[in-house]
Amino acid sequence: MKRGDGAAVDQAEWDRVKTRLKQEFGESAFKSWLTPIVATGLRDGEVELSVPTRFMRDWITTHYAERIRALWNGENPTVRKITLKVDAGRPAPAPARDGQVTTARAAFLQPLKPASAMRTTTQTSAASSQGLGSELSAPLDTRYVFENFVVGKPNEFAYAAAKRVAESDDVSFNPLFLYGGVGLGKTHLMHAIAWEIRQRTPSRKVVYLSAEKFMYSFVRALRNQDTVSFKEQFRSVDVLMIDDVQFIAGKDATQEEFFHTFNALVDQGRQIVLSADKSPSSLEEIGDRLRSRLSSGLVADLHPTTFELRLGILDAKAEQLGVVVPQRVKEFLAHKISSNVRELEGALTRLVAHAQLVGGSLTLETAQDLLQDLLRAHDRRLTMEEIQKRVAEHFKIRVSDMSSARRSRAVARPRQVAMFLSKQLTSRSLPEIGRAFGGRDHTTVMHAVRKVEELVKADTAFAEDVELLTRMLES
Ligand code: ADP
Ligand code: MG
Image (cartoon, rainbow, N blue to C red; front, side):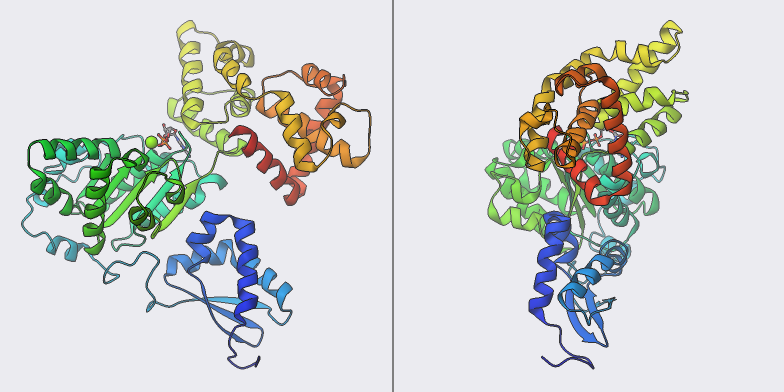
């Protein structure tokens, strides 16, 4: 192949790079960010990549460009630099019909709807006071705004995407599909988008509702033989947000109606935001057409929280409650309640309420006492045996080596990881953990915990191993 001035890119090379990127970043990030990239040329060791939007360019530049360069350089040492350019002529991953549906145009599309005129501009008014939206939109929680959302690695992608949709008047990604486990902030982000749009552009009609409410309204309309006005309502909406769409799965007629509403809105360049507990591709019981339509925009997942993020959320929450919570108590909670932010908040609220009621101070001991029920529930889920087994599998050593006396690095390191995880993910004490690992002393466990913490900071590959194991064990 000809190299040098303006040569074409070797597609096979690029395909191999993409395969590696997919392995490294996972299916969902790959689909959202890396599939839309087109490699357009190679000149003087510089590969030119083209993407459809400026936002994508910026995101890829900060998050993936360096890795793309390194991988490509491994394939072809002449490649030294990556440049990203925006090709506005290309359709965005979720094309609005003309790409630039302004508010004015959106308003023009529905000139006779009284709703826009009646809408109030105050940010704190609930949806129910907003004209026609009242029949449709569920009220928004005033606490669920972007400012109250704590951003960390597990949710920065979803946050950035949500923020982007909220801030742009044109339709950036359609639909924006947020998914993740229970209590990880999907509803919070959706409300935040709605608040922000209502504040920035009060003329846009934003409707937020749960999939259940959507189904309920539809079924009621069917019963009243009034599906025409049902459809009309939805089709005059500028931004439609439906929460927990997994509940639409399996309900054929509702699904069909949802699909039509969805298509009509997308074709008119209206924004759609959806959430679910699974990715579109794993939503069973949803028709293929709908599924592929759901995946056609930007799919952003909320990952399970990390310890740091949980700590950050506790900090923010304590500040909101106006209480000072000792660092040790926060760390304790962040260690023990790892599955779900709602539970974490609930635990903190309980602690604070208790301290205020009985006038006691917030100590580690009161925290332990009060949260015993909660913790027991967690312990039941995850045992140290389970941890030992998973960690041994992961590092390809025998489970018996978890309690053996062998001290070679190949078994000692995984054993330390398992001790560390036992400390993090169960409420066992150090001596109890030591006993489960072949009767070791609690100071050995303490040393293991410290060692793993150090290594996580120093060695990214190791940190990823630990994170992966944590996620697997918590799921
Ligand atoms: P989901 O809809 O994903 O089940 P929610 O959005 O209802 O979860 O979140 C559960 C609770 O946790 C809410 O009170 C929400 O405010 C809070 N929460 C979740 N993630 C965060 C975060 N990153 N920062 C602050 N609060 C959060
Ligand atoms: Mg929710």
